[in-house]
Length: 405
Image (tube, rainbow, N blue to C red):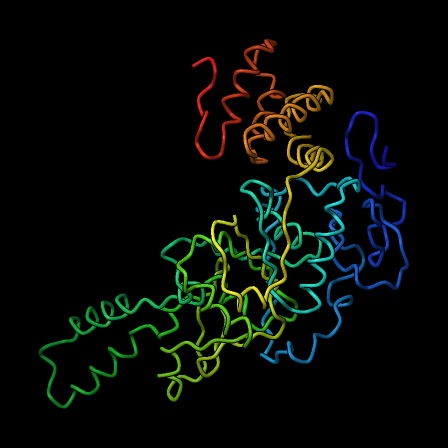
């Protein structure tokens, strides 16, 4: 048994009050246990579930390779925190069990992406927690709100970079022209025109950066950008991303045309109530964002795109990982103390059903445990088993009805 676990299966924090925190440079060993030298800075991200203590990423992250160095500026303020969203995705920030062999592989690839300033392509079956990786990285490295770009078959590169409301601007301009006084003397016509133009909001009021565009602003530390389900996109999107990932910058055509009259324009960003100043119509990053791209493996990507990404295959979570997830989400949400024996039994049945049904999603397990520990169900194991069977339907849609139905 791991020293941070007790007999009940409840995961205790790595360090209690009054004890020393684990060294930020320590590395998980082959079994996931933390060990190693204090100056081994490869292990910036450790996957422990705990935010960095008494240090920051700016102190740990070395300079990028010369070919991945970007000089955008002036620096913009740090991003807002979004602890509520991160906790909703991950549960409480409890220390994870260090028994999973996946921890070492995951930490290796995240650290490589950090040091090389390259996107991380995370593949795996639906429901294995690919998207959650972006939120774990943001929580542990204290990088603030995760920028999420959800991909569909209609998504374009432009929608990820920025949106320009040209129709809204034309409508506002027409509305202001209609308000001009019609009976003003001829010698005041120019004054009326100037006055209406001054009343029209600037072009920046009609521009908003998307998740990718916001991630490429000149932050001092990398933003975490989640590009979710890229395999749902049109075939051209992966190729369109290549130049942006290589150059670390993009231009806004509407601002380029207006830069002689408006060299500095303030626009909205993807962060709520945040703005940024764009100089000469170009957005150029300072710290290349940590890009987590997820794919369910529904299609292959172009070789040129794959060559520029680091790849991580996310396997199905094992029992220790499932215990961690359940306790992080539901330990304080249950109505009364959690019965570890009952939870362990549900996890065992979940693993068995997942193997039989071609893989189940983590949220299906969380739903079953929540109902079983809610105190709302009668102590009827047959009824619970039927309900759980309905919850754990195959992800391809087969067998979605309960046996009772």
